[in-house]
Length: 318
Length: 245
Image (cartoon, rainbow over all chains, first blue to last red; front, side):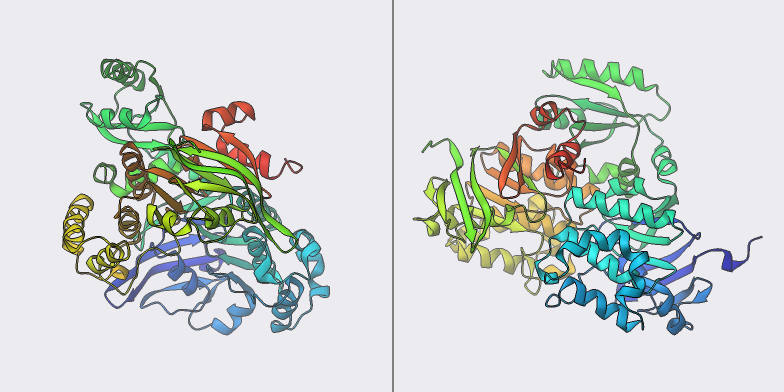
């Protein structure tokens, strides 16, 4: 038995509605100290509602949540000093400079940028060359680094980052995740949400979130491996026609584009992948795709997400 | 200018004061091609798209889009292109049908055309049941598919899609791309921006903008070979942060 306070976050049957819309339905999970925990899923899945509840900004209708052993409804004033929250929408002052924004957030928590400089240095050093620039004039990636810096300036014990990489280019996204990895190494507990499935691999554990529910909570490796049907990757020069042809093959369960390949999921659980590959190759050659290459491929978190959403219906052409 | 080219940009440049946002880019897109227009935040993509859609005059150089000169014939460019973005596409306080009618009116379609095309569009999307619902009440994924169809309502020769799939679930994202393929197979030229690097692989050709210039251009396979990279993501990282990586 572990005591409830051993976990950094415990959510127990959280529920939240907005009128007829169920934003969160019966959500339970826990996050360990110093864990980098990701909520992965599309817009409208409930990520923002959940983060606002955990950050004490919204009250759940049912269920409860504890952060750092404190109740998010009863102990909000204590929690607000101890948590760092980065909202999904850019919430800094666009007309203030980088330095002025940081100084403002420090002063709200009764401290100064100078006093906090040592622990924000790894991030602030990247911003310092632009410290007199108006926040509005920063690039997308830099804005998010500044927002992270502002969320960290009062030395919180836990971070809630709501979609910090949305709309940010692929390179800046990588850099942002590198910063999170460093913070985690230093002992920070981090809850982060993202619509990008490939970012799941940067987390210790992830919760797949869709329509207010958790589809799965586990390590990214375990979620990928939970995919339980034969999966093959197909390459062909005429890709879209090949994809349409594959949907007509006898045992196709789901067929969808995936990076520079097509992913084909077979309906026959337990059928050896090599046998399916040979079968598909013959099928594609007969359909005029002489150049088709078919290989078994390891499933990813995204394949698993698609399968859990109910792939057969969804992979029909729109 | 070549009639087969849907977009033909030569030395296209835009300066804002001392800052050169787009620095002499030259590229073309063939009719029916799906062209991925990539680049880091701030690399100049949005400025280039605003010029190509006739919303912003170039400082020097120029381009033709759908056969019209973007500087001299901006109004004809606008009539022959479609545009949608993640940020703005449909009016949330109008119903699905009202949105389609509004756009049809803007593009001067006859009432009969609007009626026929609305019917066909709703059937294709399986949205007949939602025709009289407010757009804000339908799920994001459907909204984006509807917005794309509306951008194609007046049968433009070229359509510009600015981060059309941002925040959309992985299944709907793929359905969206199938709609792109279908449009391209019908001869529509598609220029698309995205931050999903797997979607870059779905394009016939891509360009990657770095600091106002085109840093690389080619088919996804060519670029991976050229940069000895496993994925477009790797190509992108090498180009955008040559020193750091």
